[in-house]
Length: 266
Image 1 (spheres, rainbow, N blue to C red):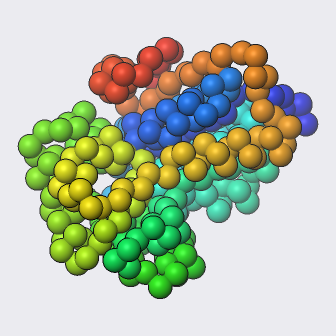
Image 2: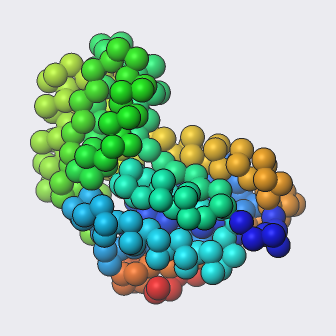
Protein backbone atom coordinates (compact mmCIF):
# COMPACT_ATOMS: atom_id res chain seq x y z
CA UNK A 1 0.00 0.00 0.00
CA UNK A 2 1.25 3.49 -0.79
CA UNK A 3 2.29 5.54 2.23
CA UNK A 4 0.14 8.40 0.95
CA UNK A 5 -3.04 6.30 0.56
CA UNK A 6 -6.00 8.37 1.76
CA UNK A 7 -9.55 7.59 2.91
CA UNK A 8 -10.98 9.50 -0.06
CA UNK A 9 -9.11 7.32 -2.58
CA UNK A 10 -11.35 4.91 -4.53
CA UNK A 11 -12.01 1.21 -4.08
CA UNK A 12 -11.39 -0.89 -7.18
CA UNK A 13 -13.91 -3.63 -8.07
CA UNK A 14 -13.46 -6.02 -10.98
CA UNK A 15 -15.08 -9.01 -12.64
CA UNK A 16 -14.85 -10.90 -15.91
CA UNK A 17 -17.88 -8.90 -17.05
CA UNK A 18 -21.11 -7.51 -15.63
CA UNK A 19 -21.58 -10.13 -12.90
CA UNK A 20 -19.62 -8.18 -10.32
CA UNK A 21 -22.29 -5.49 -10.49
CA UNK A 22 -24.23 -7.67 -8.04
CA UNK A 23 -21.39 -7.09 -5.56
CA UNK A 24 -20.99 -3.42 -6.50
CA UNK A 25 -24.67 -2.75 -5.74
CA UNK A 26 -24.29 -4.25 -2.28
CA UNK A 27 -21.14 -2.20 -1.63
CA UNK A 28 -23.04 0.94 -2.68
CA UNK A 29 -25.87 0.01 -0.30
CA UNK A 30 -23.61 -0.61 2.69
CA UNK A 31 -20.85 1.94 1.96
CA UNK A 32 -22.51 4.83 0.10
CA UNK A 33 -19.66 7.26 0.85
CA UNK A 34 -17.03 5.23 -1.03
CA UNK A 35 -15.84 6.20 -4.51
CA UNK A 36 -15.67 3.09 -6.68
CA UNK A 37 -14.02 2.14 -9.96
CA UNK A 38 -15.66 -0.90 -11.56
CA UNK A 39 -13.84 -2.79 -14.32
CA UNK A 40 -15.81 -5.23 -16.47
CA UNK A 41 -13.39 -7.39 -18.47
CA UNK A 42 -16.16 -8.25 -20.93
CA UNK A 43 -13.83 -8.61 -23.91
CA UNK A 44 -12.35 -11.64 -22.15
CA UNK A 45 -15.50 -13.11 -20.57
CA UNK A 46 -16.26 -15.73 -19.49
CA UNK A 47 -13.24 -16.52 -17.33
CA UNK A 48 -14.65 -19.96 -16.52
CA UNK A 49 -13.60 -21.32 -19.92
CA UNK A 50 -10.06 -19.90 -19.79
CA UNK A 51 -6.82 -21.41 -18.50
CA UNK A 52 -5.56 -20.48 -15.02
CA UNK A 53 -2.62 -18.68 -16.66
CA UNK A 54 -4.92 -16.51 -18.78
CA UNK A 55 -7.13 -15.62 -15.81
CA UNK A 56 -4.16 -14.70 -13.65
CA UNK A 57 -2.69 -12.53 -16.41
CA UNK A 58 -5.99 -10.65 -16.81
CA UNK A 59 -6.31 -10.17 -13.04
CA UNK A 60 -2.77 -8.74 -12.80
CA UNK A 61 -3.40 -6.29 -15.64
CA UNK A 62 -6.66 -5.04 -14.15
CA UNK A 63 -5.18 -4.64 -10.68
CA UNK A 64 -2.25 -2.67 -12.13
CA UNK A 65 -4.77 -0.38 -13.86
CA UNK A 66 -6.68 0.16 -10.62
CA UNK A 67 -3.56 0.80 -8.56
CA UNK A 68 -2.47 3.38 -11.14
CA UNK A 69 -5.75 5.14 -10.28
CA UNK A 70 -4.90 5.16 -6.56
CA UNK A 71 -7.16 2.28 -5.50
CA UNK A 72 -6.87 1.89 -1.72
CA UNK A 73 -8.39 -1.60 -1.77
CA UNK A 74 -9.43 -4.13 -4.42
CA UNK A 75 -12.60 -6.22 -4.45
CA UNK A 76 -12.23 -9.34 -6.58
CA UNK A 77 -15.91 -9.62 -7.52
CA UNK A 78 -15.39 -12.81 -9.52
CA UNK A 79 -15.38 -16.29 -8.02
CA UNK A 80 -13.24 -17.67 -10.83
CA UNK A 81 -10.57 -14.98 -10.41
CA UNK A 82 -10.65 -15.57 -6.65
CA UNK A 83 -10.12 -19.30 -7.06
CA UNK A 84 -7.29 -18.93 -9.57
CA UNK A 85 -5.54 -15.62 -8.90
CA UNK A 86 -6.23 -13.97 -5.54
CA UNK A 87 -3.38 -15.66 -3.67
CA UNK A 88 -0.89 -14.46 -6.32
CA UNK A 89 -2.38 -10.96 -6.16
CA UNK A 90 -1.93 -10.84 -2.39
CA UNK A 91 1.65 -12.01 -2.69
CA UNK A 92 2.47 -9.23 -5.15
CA UNK A 93 0.65 -6.26 -3.59
CA UNK A 94 0.18 -5.30 0.05
CA UNK A 95 -3.08 -3.36 -0.22
CA UNK A 96 -6.30 -5.00 1.05
CA UNK A 97 -7.85 -7.56 -1.31
CA UNK A 98 -11.42 -8.60 -0.51
CA UNK A 99 -12.41 -11.63 -2.55
CA UNK A 100 -15.73 -13.33 -3.15
CA UNK A 101 -15.98 -17.09 -2.99
CA UNK A 102 -18.83 -19.63 -2.90
CA UNK A 103 -20.68 -19.46 0.42
CA UNK A 104 -20.19 -23.11 1.34
CA UNK A 105 -20.03 -22.43 5.09
CA UNK A 106 -23.39 -20.54 5.24
CA UNK A 107 -24.93 -23.15 2.94
CA UNK A 108 -23.84 -26.01 5.16
CA UNK A 109 -25.13 -24.12 8.20
CA UNK A 110 -28.69 -23.71 6.89
CA UNK A 111 -29.34 -26.95 5.00
CA UNK A 112 -31.90 -29.27 6.57
CA UNK A 113 -31.49 -32.10 4.06
CA UNK A 114 -27.71 -32.13 4.40
CA UNK A 115 -27.26 -31.53 0.67
CA UNK A 116 -25.94 -28.22 -0.71
CA UNK A 117 -25.71 -27.43 -4.42
CA UNK A 118 -23.08 -24.99 -5.64
CA UNK A 119 -23.67 -23.35 -9.02
CA UNK A 120 -20.37 -22.08 -10.43
CA UNK A 121 -18.05 -21.98 -13.45
CA UNK A 122 -15.83 -24.90 -14.37
CA UNK A 123 -12.69 -23.07 -13.30
CA UNK A 124 -14.11 -22.14 -9.89
CA UNK A 125 -15.03 -25.76 -9.22
CA UNK A 126 -11.68 -27.03 -10.52
CA UNK A 127 -9.63 -24.65 -8.36
CA UNK A 128 -7.72 -26.00 -5.34
CA UNK A 129 -9.19 -23.10 -3.35
CA UNK A 130 -12.74 -24.42 -3.88
CA UNK A 131 -11.66 -27.94 -2.89
CA UNK A 132 -10.22 -26.56 0.37
CA UNK A 133 -13.35 -24.50 0.96
CA UNK A 134 -15.64 -27.53 0.57
CA UNK A 135 -13.41 -29.74 2.71
CA UNK A 136 -13.07 -27.17 5.48
CA UNK A 137 -16.64 -25.93 5.76
CA UNK A 138 -18.93 -28.77 4.60
CA UNK A 139 -19.53 -29.69 8.28
CA UNK A 140 -20.96 -33.07 7.32
CA UNK A 141 -23.09 -31.77 4.46
CA UNK A 142 -22.84 -33.25 0.98
CA UNK A 143 -21.56 -30.55 -1.39
CA UNK A 144 -22.70 -30.96 -5.01
CA UNK A 145 -20.61 -28.77 -7.33
CA UNK A 146 -22.50 -27.99 -10.55
CA UNK A 147 -20.63 -26.30 -13.42
CA UNK A 148 -22.85 -24.01 -15.50
CA UNK A 149 -21.23 -23.60 -18.95
CA UNK A 150 -22.91 -20.99 -21.12
CA UNK A 151 -24.83 -19.22 -18.35
CA UNK A 152 -22.37 -16.32 -17.99
CA UNK A 153 -22.57 -15.79 -21.77
CA UNK A 154 -26.35 -15.51 -21.59
CA UNK A 155 -26.18 -12.96 -18.79
CA UNK A 156 -23.45 -10.96 -20.56
CA UNK A 157 -25.82 -10.75 -23.55
CA UNK A 158 -28.53 -9.36 -21.29
CA UNK A 159 -30.77 -12.43 -21.67
CA UNK A 160 -31.86 -12.47 -18.07
CA UNK A 161 -35.28 -14.06 -18.54
CA UNK A 162 -35.29 -15.54 -22.04
CA UNK A 163 -36.63 -19.07 -22.68
CA UNK A 164 -33.11 -20.16 -23.67
CA UNK A 165 -31.67 -18.94 -20.35
CA UNK A 166 -34.50 -20.61 -18.42
CA UNK A 167 -33.92 -23.92 -20.20
CA UNK A 168 -30.18 -23.72 -19.55
CA UNK A 169 -30.69 -23.03 -15.83
CA UNK A 170 -33.11 -25.95 -15.59
CA UNK A 171 -30.43 -28.36 -16.84
CA UNK A 172 -28.16 -27.24 -13.98
CA UNK A 173 -30.65 -26.84 -11.13
CA UNK A 174 -33.02 -29.79 -11.51
CA UNK A 175 -30.37 -32.52 -11.06
CA UNK A 176 -29.30 -30.86 -7.78
CA UNK A 177 -32.88 -30.77 -6.48
CA UNK A 178 -33.41 -34.39 -7.55
CA UNK A 179 -30.37 -35.35 -5.44
CA UNK A 180 -31.92 -33.73 -2.37
CA UNK A 181 -30.37 -30.26 -2.33
CA UNK A 182 -32.49 -27.85 -0.28
CA UNK A 183 -29.86 -25.07 -0.45
CA UNK A 184 -28.24 -23.54 -3.53
CA UNK A 185 -25.12 -21.39 -3.35
CA UNK A 186 -24.61 -18.87 -6.14
CA UNK A 187 -20.91 -19.41 -6.86
CA UNK A 188 -20.63 -16.82 -9.63
CA UNK A 189 -21.41 -13.11 -9.32
CA UNK A 190 -23.36 -13.20 -12.58
CA UNK A 191 -25.93 -15.62 -11.22
CA UNK A 192 -27.84 -13.28 -8.86
CA UNK A 193 -29.14 -11.52 -11.97
CA UNK A 194 -31.07 -14.69 -12.89
CA UNK A 195 -32.03 -15.48 -9.30
CA UNK A 196 -35.74 -15.28 -10.13
CA UNK A 197 -35.42 -18.07 -12.71
CA UNK A 198 -33.23 -20.17 -10.40
CA UNK A 199 -35.76 -19.83 -7.56
CA UNK A 200 -38.71 -20.67 -9.81
CA UNK A 201 -37.02 -23.82 -11.11
CA UNK A 202 -35.70 -24.89 -7.69
CA UNK A 203 -39.08 -24.55 -5.98
CA UNK A 204 -40.37 -22.87 -2.80
CA UNK A 205 -38.56 -25.08 -0.29
CA UNK A 206 -35.06 -24.24 -1.50
CA UNK A 207 -32.83 -21.57 0.10
CA UNK A 208 -30.63 -19.57 -2.28
CA UNK A 209 -27.48 -17.93 -0.90
CA UNK A 210 -25.80 -14.90 -2.49
CA UNK A 211 -22.51 -13.93 -0.73
CA UNK A 212 -22.41 -10.31 -1.99
CA UNK A 213 -23.54 -8.82 1.34
CA UNK A 214 -20.76 -10.64 3.18
CA UNK A 215 -18.19 -9.17 0.76
CA UNK A 216 -19.41 -5.63 1.47
CA UNK A 217 -19.23 -6.27 5.23
CA UNK A 218 -15.68 -7.58 4.90
CA UNK A 219 -14.70 -4.54 2.83
CA UNK A 220 -16.01 -2.27 5.59
CA UNK A 221 -14.05 -4.23 8.19
CA UNK A 222 -10.80 -4.08 6.22
CA UNK A 223 -11.11 -0.36 5.46
CA UNK A 224 -11.94 0.40 9.09
CA UNK A 225 -8.96 -1.66 10.24
CA UNK A 226 -6.67 0.33 7.93
CA UNK A 227 -8.27 3.70 8.84
CA UNK A 228 -9.30 4.10 5.19
CA UNK A 229 -13.09 4.41 5.39
CA UNK A 230 -14.32 7.36 3.32
CA UNK A 231 -15.74 10.36 5.21
CA UNK A 232 -19.33 9.54 6.11
CA UNK A 233 -20.60 13.03 5.26
CA UNK A 234 -20.25 12.62 1.50
CA UNK A 235 -21.90 10.70 -1.32
CA UNK A 236 -19.54 8.50 -3.31
CA UNK A 237 -19.56 8.07 -7.08
CA UNK A 238 -18.83 5.18 -9.45
CA UNK A 239 -16.71 5.09 -12.59
CA UNK A 240 -17.41 2.19 -14.95
CA UNK A 241 -14.71 0.89 -17.28
CA UNK A 242 -14.99 -2.02 -19.71
CA UNK A 243 -12.72 -3.87 -22.09
CA UNK A 244 -15.82 -4.61 -24.16
CA UNK A 245 -18.28 -2.24 -25.80
CA UNK A 246 -19.26 0.64 -23.48
CA UNK A 247 -22.75 0.70 -25.02
CA UNK A 248 -23.26 -2.92 -23.93
CA UNK A 249 -22.36 -2.05 -20.35
CA UNK A 250 -24.62 1.02 -20.42
CA UNK A 251 -27.49 -1.16 -21.67
CA UNK A 252 -26.90 -3.71 -18.90
CA UNK A 253 -26.77 -1.00 -16.26
CA UNK A 254 -30.05 0.34 -17.59
CA UNK A 255 -31.65 -3.11 -17.48
CA UNK A 256 -30.60 -3.40 -13.84
CA UNK A 257 -31.80 0.07 -12.95
CA UNK A 258 -28.27 1.22 -12.11
CA UNK A 259 -27.27 4.87 -12.61
CA UNK A 260 -24.66 4.61 -15.39
CA UNK A 261 -22.53 7.62 -14.37
CA UNK A 262 -19.19 7.57 -16.18
CA UNK A 263 -18.84 4.63 -18.58
CA UNK A 264 -15.81 4.33 -20.84
CA UNK A 265 -13.59 1.79 -22.56
CA UNK A 266 -10.38 0.41 -21.15
